[in-house]
Image (cartoon, rainbow, N blue to C red; front, side, top):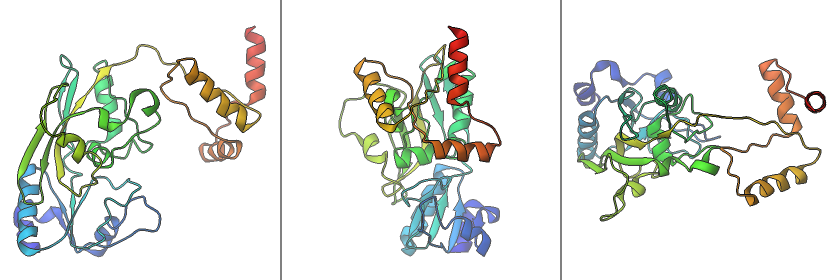
Length: 278
């Protein structure tokens, strides 16, 4: 089986030594770990199809994996067998500014996509907490969100088209570079969030927005939790939809200060600044 896998992807992308297998034995789910027999790093939909056909023939489990930053155990090979990694499929294939679309491979880092489209005056809103490490393919598999979901929605709301490989080795496409697609079954929505249990995504078409011209960050201190919670409700009640609202209690702020070796802006500093401004 390992020889056959090497024939498909090449010697350098079939990993069998202990240290390599350990790196692919977990995601970010606490306490969940399982070691595969082999890791295969693919670079095309054709290679994914060939791996699946081989695995079907030999009755070997396959666990798809992006960057391994999920929190649901979706990338953990609980049945052993093959871990199929899409980390090397990391190209931004096209930024279509005229149609506000971008086409990417699943291994593209989410933060890299943000920076690439923003350089063109465009905006991809979904922002998972691990955006500088996680991949777009993983975001699709997990249905990832992020703080901006309050205003803009989650990954699910921006996927317009997918190329995916079924466990049988068949390559399918659904959706495409279009916004309205009301005909037939919504296969896109079925695949998004399926955590690799239905297919391996190999190409993704995403909808973009114009880049907002102005962004303002506000740091607002509160003396008690209830006042902070009431303020969030009041903001929404006034029909204001901020890009994101985050809450950090004092111990968390102090921990971040220690980690970054920086002092956060204190309530006293804010009040002094406000008084000076008035």
